[in-house]
Image 1: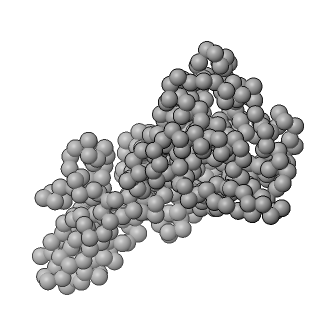
Image 2 (image 1 turned 180 degrees about the vertical axis):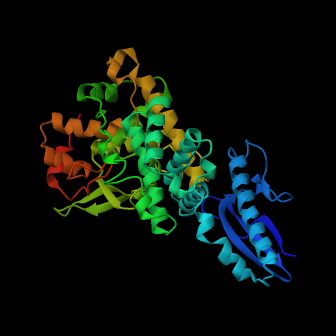
Image 3 (image 1 turned 135 degrees about the vertical axis):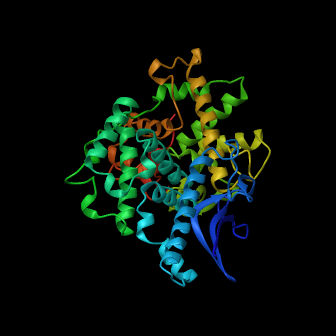
Length: 421
């Protein structure tokens, strides 16, 4: 009789520090391990029961993960029973072929979870979180979502999901668009994997049109006169002074986003030759999202801020005092950076409410996002043309976001960026 159990594979560690959970099947003197697409930290795993420990302090969604594992194990047992009923002297390879059959993958929730695990294994933790959030909202919309197959997601289902998001959750088109695009991406992946019929795809030309959602957002920026007040204000509170200086650094660096700024290290400051043959310092980094290398010329404003951070904080692994747990890696580091951004945004909101700064009510809630558009509007206030502003932000077609220009790629941009405040 074959033995089927769930085990944590401690001999392999994934990028986020977890170990894969494997289905182990043993027959006679042979055994085989099959991936479940789920991973766990050793402290989250109960070896005796072959399941996650029932403790939400360790694993918030342990019940969902255990349910998925139980379904995988149940399928494995059904396959073995079918072999025995048919009198088949099966092999482990035959068992594996049955386990990997399209019939199992056709379960939408299992495919969703497998896709999320693949993203995590590839180090795309932020993107995985978008899919996790979409899966969560779908289970809130449809309590029976775990039982659905791909054909169940038709145009009527999508329209009801839209109504739920719009009426029950009171979301705007921008948020609805994120959930719909994520679901559409998953279904396209299923079509590519051959487990969903292209003809049943509920989006696109003859289905729900995501492109018709109004996803234009108000450009959020701090006007030049308020930026000058912010730059010159004397803070008694070090926490607020740090937040102000981080915001101003992001502004002078053409709106460098929070993650890229957090990950800057001393080796990112390098010496280059300008077009006229002079040695200049640049911040050279690889953008986390696109893996593209960018350079930002260090002007006097940027250097003053870098000097302040160097004088105010003990030298460490990172250039700026954003990451306070340098030992973190993978998903743990990403969550730490996100947590620090929350505190940063809270400090910015406190700054905006300081009476002496006289920020209007429309600027009482600012965030890290504001620095990019503040830079663009400062250029515009200075009289810089739209084409140069587009190049400065790195989106000549005015479509992409948070992309930076090589400092030496456009002399006009470099000149326009001097003396903004």
